Length: 242
Image (cartoon, rainbow, N blue to C red; front, side, top):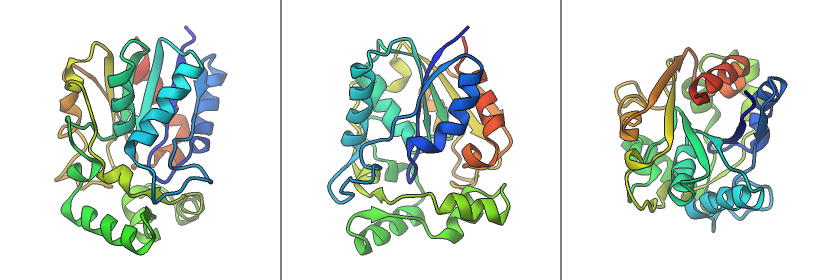
């Protein structure tokens, strides 16, 4: 049965990075949208925009497009975004799908869920770059796309754009815990994802905050969006279907 997907990209990315996966889903008969978050657009001032700007940009997109009964998918940082969107538009999503994504508690920031070393590194990079963060290639290659060869690691790194630091430090406003939302929830866990260390895991440390949820796992790094788009598209469907 054809469904409607809204795919929300993670930090340093744009909606275009989801287009390969979107086209696989479209070929299967689904309608798929891949908006770029406010804060990650070319004209955006990274020193001024924060988490609420990103959340409101998706809320506006969904409302202006009059989308309902949607499968709202978020990768990594976008877990913060889709959580905020669902809190504000609970009647529009049919299911939330988190892909190795942050699942915040009320009043938490992304930085509250990463290791102290990451938080310190983000702060230092932002201070040196007028409130914008871009990872060093060495971290991207080893921790984020460790299942790719060097050519793919380099070509994908060259696509990244600076991330507004405030999207990592702003505290999310939620009316109630995500576990209480009357929306289906799924969590995709890519098993070789070491962007957060396995001693500080995505699943189950963050996924269990969803309450009742569907777990779907697949092999791959944090950036299977690039290293295995076909496999990730299939996994997204398995996670999002009724």
